[in-house]
Image (cartoon, rainbow, N blue to C red; front, side, top):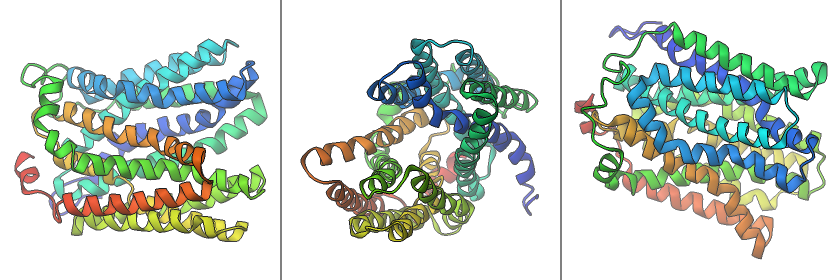
Length: 399
């Protein structure tokens, strides 16, 4: 579809969403299997959880270096490099029974995920006109969610038919296809490998110049990601605490994810038409309500209802963190700013489960849910204070 001003969604769909869909399906197929693979190789449950956590640790540690890589190689070649490294690491897991190798592969996959995510965000920030930006980035978030929904289903089928190691070969093949599709795409204007490096300031200079935005809107983005990741952790924990079987817990989570996936483009349209805050604020209010009333649920029917409410809040806000970062990013040093932005948001993603663990050390799981609800409402107030009601004028001029 081509808009009245000549912008082609079809062209962007191929360039941005094709490789993302392929890689996300591959990731989705194996990420739930990492802990099982670790146990199959002799790890204890605690060690298996630690190895699974290496994915997020690798992503956090790579967020800032990813900005350096993307600026020097360009978005296209950064994605190709990330995908090819994934091909090597994921395929090698299927040919060795080493626990250490699995840990290294998981950590490196987190690193490549940081490079891939930053490059995709930068690509859409530059390639999509401002008036369509939120829809484009919300769709990117939606594609990641769809991959996370479809991937585990395909992974389960592969494991059932061919065994656990072959799921990693499937994921590697998806990354290889993503690299091939990306290879056929043109470079962005002004993003030829190495072209921007001499003009851009250093990473910490860019971040220091942007400290005001990072400590206001960036902190709000951190809280959004914290509540989102806590929601992913607390639903299974709450189901388990009420004696709901693993199979039924998966069903509850899948129903919640259906709401998550269904609303991403609608949320992006709202942001483009009315401003980012009119999605970010109500989404946090809704997720806060869901967290606050979760302790009142004691049966699978009421738990599903609250899980759907949380999915509604999370789904409609798909892409809002990336959109806020792209709006605030400067024309010069964009990838470095976005690297810092993603470091903040990924820190929130890592802190969500830790927040649950911290509260439950001294109180109940229900208390942790209420605390997270109050935190979500505090984040909503923070976002209402610092997010512009409309797209900032300086962003318009920067583009």
